[in-house]
Image 1 (cartoon, helix red, strand yellow):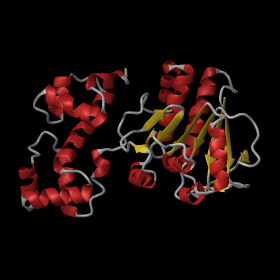
Image 2 (tube, rainbow, N blue to C red; image 1 turned 180 degrees about the vertical axis):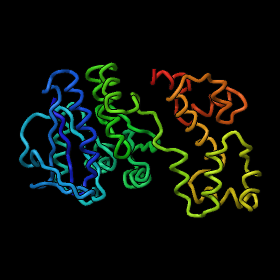
Image 3 (cartoon, helix red, strand yellow; image 1 turned 45 degrees about the vertical axis):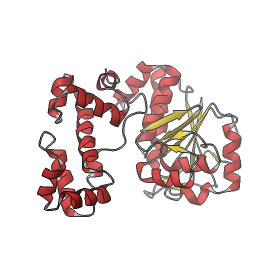
Amino acid sequence: MRIALLAFPRVQMLDIVGPADVFAEAARQLGKPRAYQVSVIGTETGPIKGTSGLRLALDGTIDTFKGTIDTLLIAGSPAVNEVAQSPQLQAWIRLQATRVRRIGSVCSGAFVLASAGLLEGRHVTTHWNSSALLAKEFPDTIVEPDSIFIRDGNIYTSAGVTAGMDLALAMVEEDHGRELALSIAREMVMYFKRPGGQSQFSAQLAAQTAERTVIRQIQTYIVENLKADLSVPTLAERSGMSERNFARVFKAEGGFTPAEFVELARIDEARRLIEGADVSLKRLADQVGYANIDGFRRAFVRRLGISPSDYRKRFL
């Protein structure tokens, strides 16, 4: 199968080499060097210089590349909007979409697919920091900012950078089964993330976004004290604010209400515990601050769209 990776100037190298290494490892473990053949295609001739300063050799451009493509993945770049509006590129993308078995994007590569008109009415994802912009610029696209990757028909989109490896692993699983994908994940020291429902958000990441020190301190306190009383009155008192002002400032700074952030932190920790050990649901609920299993289960489903028991099966 020919895997073509479309790259632009200032590409993030991991958007390219991450998926490429997953497919290469699949071919190695299959004992069939030609099972996956990876080619890098550019929009202009010559090596492409990435954001890191490294240069990437090309196998061709959209004008010169010959051969049948099975899977086309479009990498992200801070400069993606500069090339996404190119009529020549859009025409090439639309043509390839009629020929390839599957087409997808890594990170901000979703903007290229959207600009080519391929994401209208589709469920998609991208880097969490670009999700709002994608939804604003392409309102007919159904953006799901919390997903690692999404498949909608033969169109695949993934979140930022390393999520491209999860997407490639899922494609290998589609082609050759769960056992091979699991073996690759172990070899490459990856989590085996079969469906794309895992969250790309974490409480630790969210806690870095607040500008006011007091809100960051409260967020850090929440993350480190999941079993404590994390009600708004208690947190407001710790912050030295009135309840109303605290709730307003907290939402403005971090994008979550206090209750939403507490739930995010608790479920994020529960997710890590499930991935790392076989813990009973009762003990798990207690460890992350829930008084009963039912409340924990409802919150888990609300945050991740899957029950704790079903989530655990992904890592067996």
